[in-house]
Image (cartoon, rainbow, N blue to C red; front, side, top):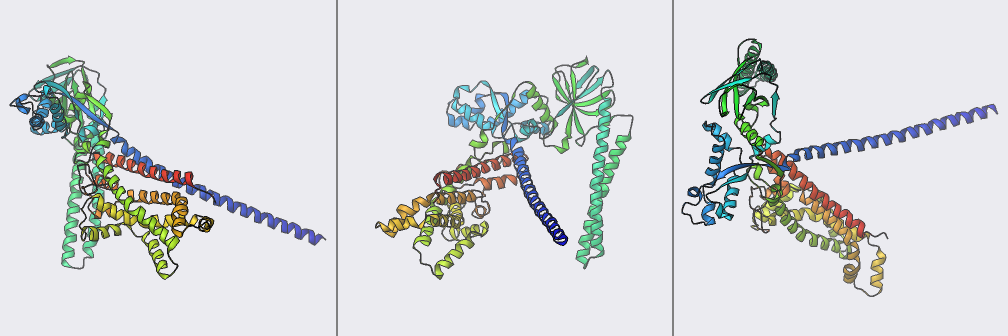
Length: 591
Protein backbone atom coordinates (compact mmCIF):
# COMPACT_ATOMS: atom_id res chain seq x y z
CA UNK A 1 0.00 0.00 0.00
CA UNK A 2 2.85 2.32 0.84
CA UNK A 3 4.58 1.40 -2.39
CA UNK A 4 1.42 2.18 -4.36
CA UNK A 5 1.03 5.57 -2.71
CA UNK A 6 4.67 6.44 -3.38
CA UNK A 7 4.29 5.42 -7.03
CA UNK A 8 1.19 7.62 -7.41
CA UNK A 9 2.98 10.56 -5.85
CA UNK A 10 5.97 9.99 -8.13
CA UNK A 11 3.72 9.76 -11.18
CA UNK A 12 1.89 12.94 -10.14
CA UNK A 13 5.16 14.82 -9.72
CA UNK A 14 6.38 13.59 -13.11
CA UNK A 15 3.08 14.64 -14.70
CA UNK A 16 3.31 18.08 -13.09
CA UNK A 17 6.85 18.53 -14.39
CA UNK A 18 5.69 17.54 -17.87
CA UNK A 19 2.86 20.09 -17.74
CA UNK A 20 5.27 22.80 -16.61
CA UNK A 21 7.62 21.93 -19.46
CA UNK A 22 4.77 22.16 -21.96
CA UNK A 23 3.64 25.47 -20.51
CA UNK A 24 7.19 26.82 -20.60
CA UNK A 25 7.57 25.68 -24.20
CA UNK A 26 4.27 27.40 -25.05
CA UNK A 27 5.41 30.61 -23.34
CA UNK A 28 8.70 30.50 -25.23
CA UNK A 29 6.87 30.02 -28.52
CA UNK A 30 4.64 33.01 -27.76
CA UNK A 31 7.68 35.07 -26.80
CA UNK A 32 9.40 34.13 -30.06
CA UNK A 33 6.32 35.11 -32.03
CA UNK A 34 5.90 38.44 -30.24
CA UNK A 35 9.61 39.19 -30.68
CA UNK A 36 9.40 38.40 -34.39
CA UNK A 37 6.38 40.70 -34.78
CA UNK A 38 8.14 43.49 -32.87
CA UNK A 39 11.30 43.15 -34.96
CA UNK A 40 9.30 43.17 -38.20
CA UNK A 41 7.26 46.16 -37.02
CA UNK A 42 10.41 48.03 -36.00
CA UNK A 43 12.00 47.34 -39.39
CA UNK A 44 8.85 48.52 -41.19
CA UNK A 45 8.61 51.61 -39.00
CA UNK A 46 12.28 52.43 -39.63
CA UNK A 47 11.84 52.01 -43.39
CA UNK A 48 8.72 54.15 -43.57
CA UNK A 49 10.19 56.72 -41.19
CA UNK A 50 13.36 57.11 -43.23
CA UNK A 51 11.37 57.47 -46.47
CA UNK A 52 8.99 60.04 -44.98
CA UNK A 53 11.87 61.97 -43.45
CA UNK A 54 13.64 62.04 -46.80
CA UNK A 55 10.45 63.03 -48.63
CA UNK A 56 9.68 65.89 -46.25
CA UNK A 57 12.15 68.14 -48.05
CA UNK A 58 10.04 68.00 -51.21
CA UNK A 59 6.80 69.07 -49.53
CA UNK A 60 7.55 72.79 -49.88
CA UNK A 61 9.36 75.01 -52.35
CA UNK A 62 10.74 78.52 -51.93
CA UNK A 63 10.28 81.65 -53.99
CA UNK A 64 12.35 84.83 -54.04
CA UNK A 65 10.43 88.03 -54.79
CA UNK A 66 12.72 90.36 -56.75
CA UNK A 67 11.83 93.62 -58.54
CA UNK A 68 12.58 93.30 -62.25
CA UNK A 69 12.36 96.02 -64.89
CA UNK A 70 10.74 94.71 -68.07
CA UNK A 71 12.71 96.83 -70.53
CA UNK A 72 10.88 97.12 -73.84
CA UNK A 73 14.08 97.18 -75.89
CA UNK A 74 15.02 93.79 -74.42
CA UNK A 75 11.74 91.92 -74.85
CA UNK A 76 9.71 93.84 -77.46
CA UNK A 77 12.05 96.24 -79.32
CA UNK A 78 9.55 96.96 -82.13
CA UNK A 79 6.61 97.50 -79.77
CA UNK A 80 4.46 94.91 -81.54
CA UNK A 81 2.90 93.52 -78.36
CA UNK A 82 3.01 90.09 -79.99
CA UNK A 83 3.18 87.36 -77.29
CA UNK A 84 5.29 85.22 -79.63
CA UNK A 85 7.90 87.96 -79.90
CA UNK A 86 7.83 88.59 -76.14
CA UNK A 87 8.39 84.91 -75.35
CA UNK A 88 11.65 85.09 -77.30
CA UNK A 89 12.85 88.13 -75.35
CA UNK A 90 15.94 88.28 -73.16
CA UNK A 91 14.32 87.46 -69.84
CA UNK A 92 17.45 85.67 -68.63
CA UNK A 93 19.40 88.91 -68.96
CA UNK A 94 16.60 90.84 -67.22
CA UNK A 95 16.77 88.39 -64.32
CA UNK A 96 20.53 88.84 -63.98
CA UNK A 97 20.14 92.63 -64.17
CA UNK A 98 17.56 92.50 -61.38
CA UNK A 99 19.97 90.59 -59.13
CA UNK A 100 22.85 92.93 -59.99
CA UNK A 101 20.65 95.90 -59.07
CA UNK A 102 19.88 94.36 -55.68
CA UNK A 103 23.52 93.45 -54.99
CA UNK A 104 25.69 96.01 -56.84
CA UNK A 105 28.76 95.27 -54.72
CA UNK A 106 29.07 91.73 -56.08
CA UNK A 107 31.48 92.47 -58.92
CA UNK A 108 33.76 89.46 -59.07
CA UNK A 109 32.90 87.24 -62.02
CA UNK A 110 32.69 83.98 -60.04
CA UNK A 111 30.73 85.71 -57.28
CA UNK A 112 28.24 87.03 -59.84
CA UNK A 113 27.75 83.53 -61.22
CA UNK A 114 27.06 82.34 -57.69
CA UNK A 115 24.59 85.19 -57.21
CA UNK A 116 22.71 84.31 -60.40
CA UNK A 117 22.49 80.69 -59.24
CA UNK A 118 20.14 81.48 -56.34
CA UNK A 119 17.33 81.70 -58.91
CA UNK A 120 16.16 78.66 -60.84
CA UNK A 121 17.21 78.45 -64.47
CA UNK A 122 13.55 77.91 -65.35
CA UNK A 123 12.32 81.05 -63.58
CA UNK A 124 13.02 83.42 -66.54
CA UNK A 125 10.77 81.25 -68.73
CA UNK A 126 7.97 81.60 -66.18
CA UNK A 127 8.54 85.36 -66.19
CA UNK A 128 8.31 85.32 -70.00
CA UNK A 129 5.01 83.43 -69.89
CA UNK A 130 3.58 85.91 -67.38
CA UNK A 131 4.56 88.93 -69.51
CA UNK A 132 3.35 87.26 -72.72
CA UNK A 133 -0.08 86.79 -71.15
CA UNK A 134 -0.07 90.38 -69.79
CA UNK A 135 1.61 92.46 -72.48
CA UNK A 136 0.70 95.73 -70.76
CA UNK A 137 3.46 94.98 -68.23
CA UNK A 138 6.16 95.69 -70.84
CA UNK A 139 8.20 98.72 -69.73
CA UNK A 140 7.13 98.47 -66.09
CA UNK A 141 8.96 97.32 -62.95
CA UNK A 142 7.19 94.41 -61.28
CA UNK A 143 7.86 92.30 -58.22
CA UNK A 144 8.14 88.77 -59.61
CA UNK A 145 8.26 85.57 -57.55
CA UNK A 146 11.30 83.73 -58.90
CA UNK A 147 11.55 80.05 -58.07
CA UNK A 148 14.61 79.47 -55.88
CA UNK A 149 17.31 77.21 -57.27
CA UNK A 150 17.98 73.83 -55.70
CA UNK A 151 20.99 75.24 -53.83
CA UNK A 152 19.04 78.17 -52.38
CA UNK A 153 16.09 75.93 -51.59
CA UNK A 154 18.27 73.43 -49.72
CA UNK A 155 19.92 76.21 -47.74
CA UNK A 156 16.54 77.66 -46.73
CA UNK A 157 15.49 74.16 -45.60
CA UNK A 158 18.64 73.81 -43.48
CA UNK A 159 20.35 71.10 -45.52
CA UNK A 160 23.69 72.96 -45.49
CA UNK A 161 23.44 74.07 -41.89
CA UNK A 162 22.66 77.59 -40.84
CA UNK A 163 24.17 80.73 -39.44
CA UNK A 164 24.91 80.68 -35.73
CA UNK A 165 25.02 84.12 -34.17
CA UNK A 166 27.98 84.92 -31.92
CA UNK A 167 27.51 87.21 -28.94
CA UNK A 168 29.04 90.69 -29.32
CA UNK A 169 29.52 93.20 -26.49
CA UNK A 170 31.48 96.13 -27.83
CA UNK A 171 31.12 98.83 -30.44
CA UNK A 172 32.40 98.28 -33.95
CA UNK A 173 34.20 100.48 -36.42
CA UNK A 174 34.22 99.54 -40.10
CA UNK A 175 36.26 101.31 -42.77
CA UNK A 176 35.62 100.21 -46.37
CA UNK A 177 38.24 100.66 -49.05
CA UNK A 178 36.99 99.34 -52.39
CA UNK A 179 36.02 95.73 -51.90
CA UNK A 180 37.99 95.33 -48.66
CA UNK A 181 37.10 96.35 -45.12
CA UNK A 182 39.02 96.85 -41.87
CA UNK A 183 37.05 96.10 -38.72
CA UNK A 184 37.85 96.84 -35.08
CA UNK A 185 35.94 96.26 -31.87
CA UNK A 186 36.08 98.31 -28.68
CA UNK A 187 36.46 95.08 -26.67
CA UNK A 188 37.82 91.63 -27.46
CA UNK A 189 34.71 90.52 -29.37
CA UNK A 190 36.74 88.45 -31.83
CA UNK A 191 38.72 86.58 -29.16
CA UNK A 192 36.10 83.85 -28.71
CA UNK A 193 35.91 83.40 -32.46
CA UNK A 194 39.69 83.04 -32.72
CA UNK A 195 39.57 80.36 -30.02
CA UNK A 196 36.71 78.58 -31.79
CA UNK A 197 38.50 78.72 -35.12
CA UNK A 198 41.59 77.13 -33.53
CA UNK A 199 39.47 74.40 -31.93
CA UNK A 200 37.90 73.68 -35.30
CA UNK A 201 41.38 73.45 -36.80
CA UNK A 202 42.22 70.77 -34.25
CA UNK A 203 39.03 68.87 -35.15
CA UNK A 204 39.88 69.07 -38.84
CA UNK A 205 43.41 67.84 -38.08
CA UNK A 206 41.97 64.83 -36.22
CA UNK A 207 39.75 64.06 -39.20
CA UNK A 208 42.74 64.24 -41.53
CA UNK A 209 44.75 61.92 -39.29
CA UNK A 210 41.91 59.38 -39.35
CA UNK A 211 41.96 59.51 -43.13
CA UNK A 212 45.76 59.14 -43.07
CA UNK A 213 45.40 56.03 -40.89
CA UNK A 214 43.05 54.52 -43.44
CA UNK A 215 45.52 55.27 -46.19
CA UNK A 216 48.24 53.65 -44.09
CA UNK A 217 46.12 50.49 -43.93
CA UNK A 218 45.91 50.61 -47.72
CA UNK A 219 49.72 50.92 -47.86
CA UNK A 220 50.04 47.75 -45.79
CA UNK A 221 47.63 45.87 -48.05
CA UNK A 222 49.58 46.89 -51.16
CA UNK A 223 52.85 45.97 -49.42
CA UNK A 224 51.52 42.44 -48.99
CA UNK A 225 50.54 42.39 -52.66
CA UNK A 226 54.06 43.50 -53.60
CA UNK A 227 55.61 40.67 -51.60
CA UNK A 228 53.22 38.08 -53.12
CA UNK A 229 53.24 39.37 -56.71
CA UNK A 230 53.45 36.56 -59.26
CA UNK A 231 54.77 38.49 -62.26
CA UNK A 232 56.45 41.74 -63.26
CA UNK A 233 53.20 43.40 -64.35
CA UNK A 234 51.42 42.51 -61.13
CA UNK A 235 54.46 43.70 -59.15
CA UNK A 236 54.55 47.02 -61.01
CA UNK A 237 50.82 47.67 -60.44
CA UNK A 238 51.08 46.81 -56.75
CA UNK A 239 54.10 49.10 -56.28
CA UNK A 240 52.32 51.93 -58.10
CA UNK A 241 49.24 51.55 -55.90
CA UNK A 242 51.39 51.37 -52.75
CA UNK A 243 53.31 54.52 -53.66
CA UNK A 244 50.10 56.41 -54.50
CA UNK A 245 48.51 55.43 -51.16
CA UNK A 246 51.70 56.39 -49.32
CA UNK A 247 51.75 59.79 -51.05
CA UNK A 248 48.13 60.43 -50.06
CA UNK A 249 48.91 59.37 -46.49
CA UNK A 250 51.92 61.67 -46.24
CA UNK A 251 49.95 64.55 -47.72
CA UNK A 252 47.15 64.12 -45.20
CA UNK A 253 49.63 63.94 -42.33
CA UNK A 254 51.33 67.10 -43.55
CA UNK A 255 47.99 68.94 -43.77
CA UNK A 256 47.10 67.80 -40.24
CA UNK A 257 50.47 68.98 -38.90
CA UNK A 258 50.01 72.37 -40.56
CA UNK A 259 46.56 72.76 -39.02
CA UNK A 260 47.85 71.72 -35.58
CA UNK A 261 50.70 74.22 -35.87
CA UNK A 262 48.23 76.98 -36.72
CA UNK A 263 46.02 75.99 -33.80
CA UNK A 264 48.93 76.13 -31.31
CA UNK A 265 49.81 79.76 -32.06
CA UNK A 266 48.53 81.93 -29.24
CA UNK A 267 49.36 85.36 -30.62
CA UNK A 268 48.83 86.85 -34.04
CA UNK A 269 45.93 86.74 -36.44
CA UNK A 270 44.32 83.72 -38.06
CA UNK A 271 43.67 83.74 -41.78
CA UNK A 272 40.40 82.12 -42.87
CA UNK A 273 40.02 80.21 -46.14
CA UNK A 274 37.44 77.89 -47.72
CA UNK A 275 38.46 75.05 -45.39
CA UNK A 276 37.49 77.08 -42.31
CA UNK A 277 34.00 77.79 -41.05
CA UNK A 278 32.95 81.06 -42.59
CA UNK A 279 32.53 84.09 -40.35
CA UNK A 280 30.04 86.62 -41.72
CA UNK A 281 29.38 90.04 -40.27
CA UNK A 282 26.31 92.20 -40.63
CA UNK A 283 27.28 95.83 -40.18
CA UNK A 284 24.21 98.09 -40.26
CA UNK A 285 22.76 97.50 -43.76
CA UNK A 286 25.88 95.77 -45.13
CA UNK A 287 27.44 92.31 -45.06
CA UNK A 288 31.12 91.40 -44.83
CA UNK A 289 32.99 88.12 -45.00
CA UNK A 290 35.84 87.92 -42.48
CA UNK A 291 39.11 86.81 -44.11
CA UNK A 292 41.56 87.45 -41.24
CA UNK A 293 40.89 87.79 -37.54
CA UNK A 294 42.59 88.37 -34.19
CA UNK A 295 41.30 89.26 -30.73
CA UNK A 296 40.24 92.85 -31.47
CA UNK A 297 40.61 93.39 -35.20
CA UNK A 298 39.51 91.73 -38.41
CA UNK A 299 39.77 92.17 -42.14
CA UNK A 300 37.03 91.26 -44.52
CA UNK A 301 35.66 91.23 -48.02
CA UNK A 302 32.63 93.36 -48.84
CA UNK A 303 29.62 91.45 -50.13
CA UNK A 304 27.01 94.12 -49.46
CA UNK A 305 28.60 97.48 -48.69
CA UNK A 306 27.24 99.51 -45.76
CA UNK A 307 25.73 102.82 -46.80
CA UNK A 308 28.55 104.59 -44.91
CA UNK A 309 31.58 103.86 -42.73
CA UNK A 310 30.70 102.90 -39.17
CA UNK A 311 32.53 104.24 -36.16
CA UNK A 312 31.79 102.98 -32.65
CA UNK A 313 28.43 101.61 -33.80
CA UNK A 314 26.37 99.09 -31.82
CA UNK A 315 24.49 98.00 -34.96
CA UNK A 316 26.39 94.85 -35.90
CA UNK A 317 26.26 91.09 -35.57
CA UNK A 318 28.64 88.19 -36.09
CA UNK A 319 27.66 84.82 -37.53
CA UNK A 320 29.55 81.57 -38.07
CA UNK A 321 28.48 78.80 -40.44
CA UNK A 322 28.04 75.17 -39.45
CA UNK A 323 30.16 73.94 -42.38
CA UNK A 324 33.22 75.27 -44.22
CA UNK A 325 32.55 76.76 -47.63
CA UNK A 326 34.50 73.91 -49.26
CA UNK A 327 32.14 71.36 -47.69
CA UNK A 328 28.84 72.82 -48.90
CA UNK A 329 27.30 73.62 -52.25
CA UNK A 330 26.02 77.03 -51.21
CA UNK A 331 28.66 79.78 -51.19
CA UNK A 332 29.05 82.65 -48.74
CA UNK A 333 27.89 85.11 -51.41
CA UNK A 334 24.71 83.09 -51.90
CA UNK A 335 24.14 82.86 -48.14
CA UNK A 336 24.40 86.63 -47.77
CA UNK A 337 22.07 87.23 -50.71
CA UNK A 338 19.48 84.78 -49.34
CA UNK A 339 19.72 86.19 -45.82
CA UNK A 340 19.35 89.72 -47.18
CA UNK A 341 16.25 88.74 -49.11
CA UNK A 342 14.87 86.87 -46.10
CA UNK A 343 15.38 89.90 -43.88
CA UNK A 344 13.43 92.07 -46.33
CA UNK A 345 10.52 89.59 -46.43
CA UNK A 346 11.22 88.56 -50.03
CA UNK A 347 11.42 84.80 -49.31
CA UNK A 348 8.21 82.80 -49.40
CA UNK A 349 7.76 79.09 -48.69
CA UNK A 350 4.69 77.41 -50.24
CA UNK A 351 3.36 73.90 -50.77
CA UNK A 352 5.12 72.24 -53.68
CA UNK A 353 2.22 71.73 -56.12
CA UNK A 354 4.76 71.82 -58.94
CA UNK A 355 5.99 68.37 -57.89
CA UNK A 356 2.58 66.87 -58.68
CA UNK A 357 1.76 68.92 -61.79
CA UNK A 358 4.94 69.01 -63.90
CA UNK A 359 7.06 66.51 -65.79
CA UNK A 360 10.67 65.51 -65.31
CA UNK A 361 13.56 67.98 -65.52
CA UNK A 362 17.32 68.05 -65.13
CA UNK A 363 16.86 70.85 -62.59
CA UNK A 364 15.73 69.40 -59.25
CA UNK A 365 13.53 72.36 -58.33
CA UNK A 366 11.59 72.01 -61.62
CA UNK A 367 11.23 68.21 -61.64
CA UNK A 368 7.83 66.64 -61.03
CA UNK A 369 6.11 63.27 -61.26
CA UNK A 370 3.07 64.07 -63.40
CA UNK A 371 4.69 62.71 -66.54
CA UNK A 372 5.58 59.47 -64.73
CA UNK A 373 2.06 59.21 -63.27
CA UNK A 374 0.46 59.58 -66.70
CA UNK A 375 2.98 57.12 -68.16
CA UNK A 376 2.09 54.64 -65.40
CA UNK A 377 -1.62 55.10 -66.21
CA UNK A 378 -1.18 54.33 -69.92
CA UNK A 379 1.11 51.39 -69.15
CA UNK A 380 -1.32 49.90 -66.62
CA UNK A 381 -4.20 50.44 -69.05
CA UNK A 382 -2.41 48.41 -71.74
CA UNK A 383 -1.49 45.78 -69.15
CA UNK A 384 -5.07 45.43 -67.95
CA UNK A 385 -6.64 45.34 -71.42
CA UNK A 386 -4.27 42.55 -72.46
CA UNK A 387 -3.83 40.52 -69.28
CA UNK A 388 -7.36 40.54 -67.84
CA UNK A 389 -9.40 39.10 -70.74
CA UNK A 390 -6.68 36.66 -71.77
CA UNK A 391 -6.07 35.53 -68.19
CA UNK A 392 -9.75 35.09 -67.35
CA UNK A 393 -10.44 33.29 -70.63
CA UNK A 394 -7.52 30.93 -69.99
CA UNK A 395 -8.72 30.25 -66.46
CA UNK A 396 -12.28 29.54 -67.64
CA UNK A 397 -11.08 27.15 -70.31
CA UNK A 398 -8.66 25.28 -68.05
CA UNK A 399 -11.14 25.00 -65.19
CA UNK A 400 -14.45 24.44 -67.00
CA UNK A 401 -13.80 23.07 -70.49
CA UNK A 402 -10.28 21.62 -70.84
CA UNK A 403 -9.97 17.84 -70.64
CA UNK A 404 -7.75 16.41 -67.95
CA UNK A 405 -4.76 15.01 -69.83
CA UNK A 406 -0.99 15.36 -70.02
CA UNK A 407 -1.20 18.41 -72.26
CA UNK A 408 -3.30 20.43 -69.79
CA UNK A 409 -1.08 19.22 -66.94
CA UNK A 410 1.93 20.58 -68.84
CA UNK A 411 0.14 23.91 -69.32
CA UNK A 412 -0.63 24.12 -65.60
CA UNK A 413 2.97 23.37 -64.65
CA UNK A 414 4.24 26.05 -67.03
CA UNK A 415 1.78 28.63 -65.71
CA UNK A 416 2.99 27.97 -62.17
CA UNK A 417 6.61 28.18 -63.31
CA UNK A 418 6.02 31.47 -65.18
CA UNK A 419 4.72 33.02 -61.98
CA UNK A 420 8.19 32.53 -60.46
CA UNK A 421 10.26 33.73 -63.44
CA UNK A 422 12.33 36.89 -62.62
CA UNK A 423 10.74 39.98 -64.11
CA UNK A 424 13.85 41.00 -66.04
CA UNK A 425 13.44 37.86 -68.19
CA UNK A 426 10.16 39.28 -69.45
CA UNK A 427 12.01 42.53 -70.19
CA UNK A 428 14.56 40.66 -72.27
CA UNK A 429 11.72 38.92 -74.09
CA UNK A 430 10.09 42.25 -74.85
CA UNK A 431 13.38 43.75 -76.04
CA UNK A 432 14.16 40.83 -78.35
CA UNK A 433 10.67 40.06 -79.70
CA UNK A 434 8.33 43.02 -79.41
CA UNK A 435 10.91 45.73 -80.10
CA UNK A 436 13.32 43.78 -82.26
CA UNK A 437 10.89 41.70 -84.34
CA UNK A 438 7.49 43.43 -84.27
CA UNK A 439 8.83 46.99 -84.12
CA UNK A 440 6.80 48.18 -81.13
CA UNK A 441 7.80 51.81 -80.30
CA UNK A 442 10.66 51.96 -77.84
CA UNK A 443 10.12 53.73 -74.50
CA UNK A 444 6.35 53.68 -75.10
CA UNK A 445 3.61 52.51 -72.70
CA UNK A 446 2.55 50.04 -75.39
CA UNK A 447 5.85 48.15 -75.10
CA UNK A 448 5.90 48.35 -71.31
CA UNK A 449 2.25 47.29 -71.06
CA UNK A 450 2.77 44.21 -73.22
CA UNK A 451 5.76 43.11 -71.15
CA UNK A 452 3.94 43.67 -67.85
CA UNK A 453 0.86 41.88 -69.21
CA UNK A 454 2.97 38.78 -69.88
CA UNK A 455 4.40 39.02 -66.38
CA UNK A 456 0.95 39.47 -64.79
CA UNK A 457 -0.85 36.74 -66.75
CA UNK A 458 0.20 33.80 -64.50
CA UNK A 459 -0.98 35.65 -61.38
CA UNK A 460 -4.37 36.43 -62.93
CA UNK A 461 -4.82 32.89 -64.28
CA UNK A 462 -3.98 31.26 -60.94
CA UNK A 463 -6.26 33.64 -58.99
CA UNK A 464 -9.09 33.28 -61.50
CA UNK A 465 -8.89 29.48 -61.44
CA UNK A 466 -8.98 29.49 -57.65
CA UNK A 467 -12.03 31.78 -57.66
CA UNK A 468 -13.84 29.63 -60.25
CA UNK A 469 -13.00 26.45 -58.37
CA UNK A 470 -14.41 27.98 -55.17
CA UNK A 471 -17.92 28.21 -56.71
CA UNK A 472 -19.88 25.20 -55.33
CA UNK A 473 -20.63 22.38 -57.81
CA UNK A 474 -24.31 22.65 -56.87
CA UNK A 475 -24.51 25.96 -58.77
CA UNK A 476 -23.37 24.25 -61.94
CA UNK A 477 -25.61 21.23 -61.35
CA UNK A 478 -28.68 23.39 -60.74
CA UNK A 479 -28.09 25.40 -63.91
CA UNK A 480 -27.52 22.31 -65.99
CA UNK A 481 -30.58 20.69 -64.39
CA UNK A 482 -32.91 23.42 -65.64
CA UNK A 483 -31.58 23.08 -69.18
CA UNK A 484 -28.73 25.58 -69.38
CA UNK A 485 -25.81 24.73 -71.63
CA UNK A 486 -22.22 24.48 -70.38
CA UNK A 487 -21.51 27.91 -71.88
CA UNK A 488 -24.58 29.48 -70.25
CA UNK A 489 -23.77 27.87 -66.93
CA UNK A 490 -20.23 29.19 -67.01
CA UNK A 491 -20.93 32.76 -68.12
CA UNK A 492 -24.34 33.33 -66.50
CA UNK A 493 -23.77 31.67 -63.13
CA UNK A 494 -20.21 30.57 -62.37
CA UNK A 495 -18.32 33.59 -63.71
CA UNK A 496 -20.44 36.27 -61.93
CA UNK A 497 -20.04 34.44 -58.64
CA UNK A 498 -16.28 34.08 -59.16
CA UNK A 499 -15.76 37.63 -60.39
CA UNK A 500 -14.95 39.17 -56.92
CA UNK A 501 -12.10 36.72 -56.45
CA UNK A 502 -10.95 37.25 -60.04
CA UNK A 503 -10.92 41.03 -59.59
CA UNK A 504 -9.03 40.68 -56.32
CA UNK A 505 -6.31 38.59 -57.96
CA UNK A 506 -6.20 40.96 -60.93
CA UNK A 507 -5.75 44.03 -58.75
CA UNK A 508 -2.98 42.35 -56.77
CA UNK A 509 -1.25 41.37 -60.02
CA UNK A 510 -1.62 44.91 -61.36
CA UNK A 511 -0.19 46.33 -58.13
CA UNK A 512 2.81 44.05 -58.54
CA UNK A 513 3.21 45.21 -62.14
CA UNK A 514 2.96 48.87 -61.09
CA UNK A 515 6.00 48.46 -58.87
CA UNK A 516 8.20 46.76 -61.48
CA UNK A 517 11.31 48.49 -62.80
CA UNK A 518 13.67 45.96 -64.41
CA UNK A 519 11.49 44.85 -67.37
CA UNK A 520 10.61 48.46 -68.23
CA UNK A 521 14.27 49.48 -68.21
CA UNK A 522 14.94 46.75 -70.77
CA UNK A 523 12.34 48.18 -73.19
CA UNK A 524 13.73 51.70 -72.92
CA UNK A 525 11.36 53.36 -70.46
CA UNK A 526 14.33 54.65 -68.49
CA UNK A 527 14.87 57.46 -71.01
CA UNK A 528 14.74 61.09 -69.91
CA UNK A 529 11.21 62.21 -70.87
CA UNK A 530 10.17 65.82 -70.27
CA UNK A 531 6.78 65.88 -72.04
CA UNK A 532 3.67 64.31 -70.57
CA UNK A 533 2.58 61.37 -72.79
CA UNK A 534 -0.80 61.69 -74.50
CA UNK A 535 -1.15 58.10 -75.70
CA UNK A 536 0.22 54.58 -75.54
CA UNK A 537 2.73 55.17 -78.37
CA UNK A 538 4.30 58.35 -76.96
CA UNK A 539 7.65 58.14 -75.19
CA UNK A 540 7.07 57.86 -71.46
CA UNK A 541 8.40 56.63 -68.16
CA UNK A 542 6.70 55.23 -65.05
CA UNK A 543 6.91 55.94 -61.34
CA UNK A 544 9.30 53.12 -60.33
CA UNK A 545 11.69 54.00 -63.15
CA UNK A 546 11.44 57.69 -62.19
CA UNK A 547 12.48 56.75 -58.66
CA UNK A 548 15.38 54.73 -60.03
CA UNK A 549 16.59 57.61 -62.24
CA UNK A 550 16.35 60.27 -59.53
CA UNK A 551 18.19 58.09 -57.03
CA UNK A 552 21.12 57.97 -59.46
CA UNK A 553 21.36 61.75 -59.98
CA UNK A 554 24.23 63.53 -58.17
CA UNK A 555 22.25 66.64 -57.16
CA UNK A 556 21.37 66.49 -53.50
CA UNK A 557 17.93 68.02 -54.03
CA UNK A 558 16.87 64.87 -55.93
CA UNK A 559 17.11 62.89 -52.67
CA UNK A 560 13.94 64.52 -51.36
CA UNK A 561 12.26 64.16 -54.76
CA UNK A 562 13.13 60.44 -54.73
CA UNK A 563 11.62 59.98 -51.27
CA UNK A 564 8.45 61.87 -52.26
CA UNK A 565 8.06 59.79 -55.44
CA UNK A 566 8.45 56.61 -53.36
CA UNK A 567 5.69 57.82 -51.02
CA UNK A 568 3.38 58.50 -53.99
CA UNK A 569 4.12 55.05 -55.43
CA UNK A 570 3.46 53.41 -52.07
CA UNK A 571 0.15 55.26 -51.76
CA UNK A 572 -0.92 53.91 -55.16
CA UNK A 573 0.07 50.37 -54.15
CA UNK A 574 -1.73 50.64 -50.80
CA UNK A 575 -4.83 52.02 -52.52
CA UNK A 576 -4.88 49.14 -55.01
CA UNK A 577 -4.47 46.54 -52.27
CA UNK A 578 -7.18 48.20 -50.17
CA UNK A 579 -9.47 48.09 -53.20
CA UNK A 580 -8.80 44.37 -53.51
CA UNK A 581 -9.67 43.84 -49.83
CA UNK A 582 -12.87 45.90 -50.13
CA UNK A 583 -13.99 43.99 -53.21
CA UNK A 584 -13.30 40.68 -51.55
CA UNK A 585 -15.23 41.58 -48.39
CA UNK A 586 -18.04 43.29 -50.27
CA UNK A 587 -18.82 40.49 -52.70
CA UNK A 588 -17.44 37.46 -50.90
CA UNK A 589 -19.98 34.70 -50.31
CA UNK A 590 -19.73 31.89 -47.81
CA UNK A 591 -21.14 28.66 -49.16
